[in-house]
Amino acid sequence: LFGGGTDVSSYSDKFGGLVVNLAINLKQHVTYYNGQDLFSLDQNKFPYDVSPEFVYKIFEEFKINGQHHSKIETSFDGVIGAGLGSSGAIGIATVGALNKALNLKLSKHDIAEKAFEIENKVHYTGRQDQYASLHGGMNIMEFGNKVNIKPFNKEIAQTIQESLILLFLGKREQDIQKGLKELSYDQILALHEIKKLAEQSIAVIEQGDIEKLGNLLTQVWEYKKLSNKVSTLLIDQFYEKGLKNGAYGGKLLGSGGSGYMLFIIDPSKKEQFAHQMGEGTDFEISWGGLSTRIL
Picture 1 (spheres, rainbow, N blue to C red):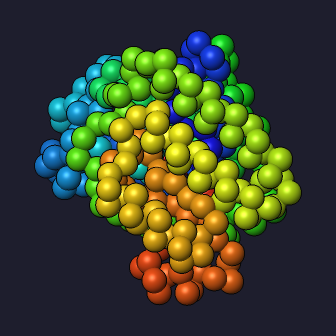
Picture 2: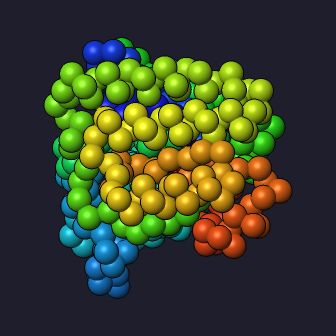
């Protein structure tokens, strides 16, 4: 929701990051098979459009034999590579599965940091997706010398969620996040403003003021466009159309370029909004976070 970009190391290590994040129930699912003879499983299984490089990197880091003694199957409820944090989620799911299966006794913090550390070697990323996937719910996340997670209560989070609409614009075609790896002076200024708006949003969320929250999201979106090359003419036109059709505000999710756009609107106007803008992606808050079990 707020603070995206301030969680990347190039910013948070120097200035401290602040994110307000809502975890949703479009989940990554990972099944890890570990046994003496797995010839009956002919190969690892991933969604058709996914590079397994990141998951294999996790296996490598944990010194897992990826031949006949270990197999993995993965799936995702949403669209991968579209700003929903699917890579952060699969990192958490995979490290969590290995932790459970191999009895590694990693703490929650260790799971999140290990998943972040490995993903950061594959492509530049922030920390919020890992911690959202790990904890679930709606949280204030502070990133600096240490990570602090402060949850909102369920009633407040539910009020916000009922006012949100998620619309899919298409998959992004490039890794835009790497544009934050080395920050210019102007990018730092934009991220400072994004962090200030995240700070302001906390009281507004607690008050349940949807209209004011929409105004803050609109401001965030303008600064997000200054912080990196996240938008296109088509995205800008779609966004303006959303505002004209009654949305209080919104923003593109993830690193940008395309993906999912989030609008906030009076719940009573959702049906009319959908008629003009298209049906949104159905979602609810994910309260449980990471869940692992032996099958």
